[in-house]
Image 1 (cartoon, rainbow, N blue to C red):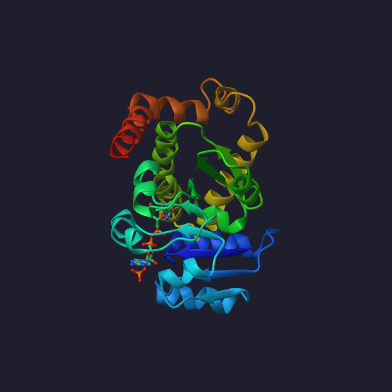
Image 2 (image 1 turned 60 degrees about the horizontal axis):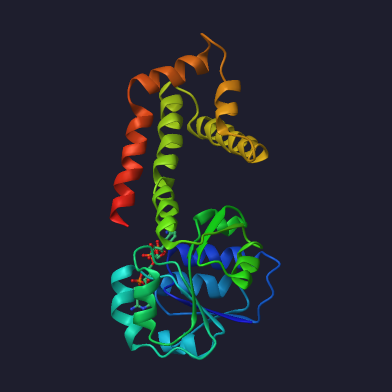
Length: 253
Ligand SMILES: NC(=O)c1ccc[n+]([C@@H]2O[C@H](COP(=O)([O-])OP(=O)(O)OC[C@H]3O[C@@H](n4cnc5c(N)ncnc54)[C@H](OP(=O)(O)O)[C@@H]3O)[C@@H](O)[C@H]2O)c1
């Protein structure tokens, strides 16, 4: 199978890196020449990567075509491209919905919207897809955990949550900097915070079938440090604010 990518930005680089380290069987990865620096880097790092002449060249030489461009770019370039019969199109574009994609692509093809996240480069993390598609699910299951969504409206909720990735990193950043301010070594401070949160996330994954309320309860003793932490944050409106922010992101979608 030949995999084509239009737009060689951050998320496409992550997906291609994930694929290259996975058990996915593919013949070639064909990428568009933009972004030039990232395209050259991927070609150098991964043997089966080829840089195409242009976007049409990507399509002409691929079985599946991934769209990793910004919405405004998609609106501009998709109507000018000629897709092949039986091609599968997988769009990472956040705000172009399924119906709009169909109109822009003009051909009756299988189109799947997907939300990969940067940890896909490690073969980890969720990939929400709409509409459900067995082949696409099998593919993404080799570089993460696929969540199939039946209703496009519902997929907006996953996009909204995906908008909390940078805030999560900023949480780690704030805590690391706090430690470092106490005259602790910067790298050691960051190491402590990052490994702590990574282990906590692993624990949450281990308990993925039981309600998170259980972990919240079990991780605090009345009057203890975590008890104080959570109560102070609750009192300050921190979690309510988080909900409001997710709602605000959701409204944009
Ligand atoms: N980043 C994420 O975590 C993430 C997650 C899920 C979905 N997405 C979605 O994926 C899409 C890409 O996001 P991103 O963060 O990867 O953005 P990005 O890093 O800005 O990548 C966009 C890419 O599109 C290229 N491009 C611009 N005009 C083009 C054209 N006419 N033809 C072909 N390529 C063109 C850019 O090249 P130049 O640099 O040369 O302009 C760049 O390589 C967005 O729609 C976003 O919503 C992103």
